[in-house]
Image 1 (tube, rainbow, N blue to C red):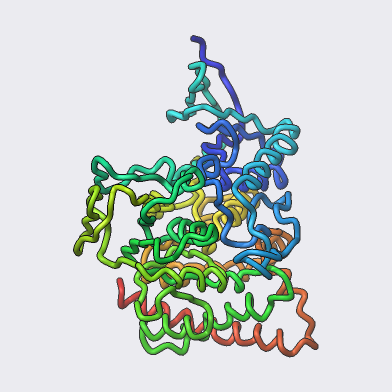
Image 2: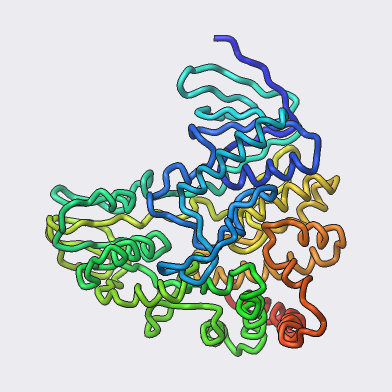
Length: 466
């Protein structure tokens, strides 16, 4: 079979949210051509395999590509997100990314999209259905958006043994349950575990019929503090002021976390347990109240074996039965936490440059790629904010985030870009504050006054933890 020769300025591997956010800015800010290669049949990456009741856990206004709004500009009037900005469903997100590809990228004439294709390296890829071979030559940059690819429950292989006679499923399959089991055992304390528990409670499952295996408790973020409208200014920007003040005034790492909780930056499900995990999961106060209804929470470490009559954990065992449904929520959201330079020769490896915002990060990286000439400058402006796993990782990511914010503030061009990019979220809120609004100005002053002392305290704590 003959190999088809192709040319483009950018060869992008993957068609998930990060890839599309990057390409969107490249199309808007350059005249470059792009080839996108992806194994999935539709754009959207891991959203193609998401569980049917998944939603964003931050407002839709922060998600998608820079040039096309995802949010409808509405607040939820019912449910556990009531009173807060809408959270797009998985179905909405998949349709949105399909629209971005069909209505904007492809009609531009500068994007060529190859779904159902496997990239094998050195500009080579092939179609998984037909075997057709392709070779991309003379590309300016390779953009590897698969470096931080997500693990999802439906394609995840558990790292424990499930023995014969056990009813076991990913949370994707919960809507297919048609008969009442003896109970539900939710395995995993992260965001998918939270979503599984909330879905069960929403569908009137008795909380006493839910056993929640939680190897580690997590610090959580209050979704009210992420709202992008002026109505929530005292919560969103107020939380940022509370954060730097809590850090700056703390006397130890533990004291810092307790201050962050006291000032409303952090939440935890059980106030008697000091969390040691942090993944950046965001929940509402209503969701938190629901989760606290579940009393059968097992804190005996990770599962090693599930038998028909018992579950063996690292620190003990609990009873179960062949009539219980065991729900797998143990997949780690991200499979690669190793940091590498974003810009290397002809390779761009998108990673987070702002906490909790991978799509904003991809858009920002594309802007820096389009605007600045050398990799040294680009990497200075795109220092990686590490993805968190433990509570100590929050210290690392916050220090890196504050450093990036400081560096960006020194560049008028970057300040202007942030102000006009819809994914940034808060720059326009800050810009629109009137000098006569003393309450909001006081919040901004608290942020400015505590930023440097907070950074100094974080450096002190970083030296302690290594």
